[in-house]
Amino acid sequence: MQRGAGLIYPSFPTNNVQSALNEVALARETITLRRLAEVLGLSQTTVSRALNGFPEVNEATRARVIEAAQRLNYRPSASAASLATGKARTIGHVVTLGDHMMINPHFTDFVAGAGEVYARFGYEMLLRITGSEGEQDVYRDLISRRRVDGVVVHGPKTRDPRIPFLRKLGIPFVVHGRCEEDPASYSWIDVNNRRAFMRACNFLIDLGHRRIGLINGIETMNFADRRRQGYEAALAARGIDLDTSIMFSADMIEPHGYRAAAQMLSSRKPPTAVLVSSILPAIGVMRALAERELRPATDLSIIVFDDCLSFLQPGNEAVSGAIPFFTAMRSSMRLAGRRVAELLIEQIEGQHSAPKHELWEAELVIGHTTGPCAPAESQVPVRVKPFRRYS
Image (cartoon, rainbow, N blue to C red; front, side, top):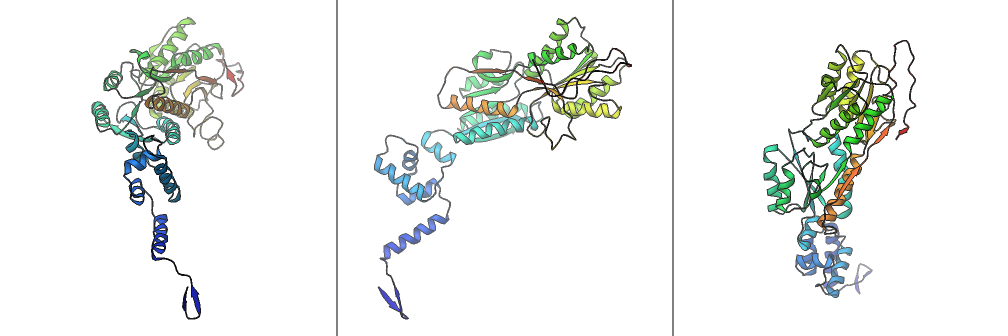
């Protein structure tokens, strides 16, 4: 004991005091794998392998590493995990800017779903934006530098050179959608777009509509090509002639929907109903109707392919005054993002070697934008009850 000014102080051995001060300092800093290895006097590889359960690390060392990691609140990063496993713990998303697959609300919702799965399994996401001409160079760079363990392919075209290219490189990949060439040879998740538009068109025909327009996406994209096929097949099966003057194909944006609807509504024989490829051009259709003081369901029935955007869902009170309650073929982009991520991680971690395929059916939800085609203006149309399921 030490005395001074009438007080008694406990004394500690010098080495214990220094150890306590070191512990306080360590508690205040963010502990990296390198710092944890320095504290333990071990190599980063040994520490990483101990934390990841590698059998070549003896139990005494493993216990010592785990105890120190818990005491110092160490949280492994993806790069630290990659040191032990030889993997990047990163998934790549390559998006072509200026092409038909660009940053949009649908892509954002998909990535949000995928990100939930990446976080759960300890993966990070790497987003690369490039011009369409340099896309293959980006893939080569990511793979040669071992930046990613696998990639998600977005917006497949009917004939897509990325598929054979990635197969040749030998990197795990999953396609959101599919292309026509050899779809059994790679993993994909897709919506049955052909059947979705057949069902939507048949529903309108059952309501008495015979002149039905189409506002589609770019038809070199596989999903848009299949939607047009479904639309044409439904009309042919019911003996209705195809009229290309009310069929449009362009980027799925609001101005395209507006221009296509304006052209149709200004024609000598406008359609009584229209199928729209996305909620974004459908909002443009609503603008064209409003300018002409026309009403959805009464003057023009509208069915939209709604990807269940989390912030534009029919029935959301926060936006119910601004966004119409569309009758829609519905399929969730967020759920698709989750499932694509799960399949890709399973592939990366060797849980399956054979390609997996999932074809999802879209659900027809009846809203406020469809109604019977009145045989005469004097007749009062009978409204269809909103928000019921139609099978």
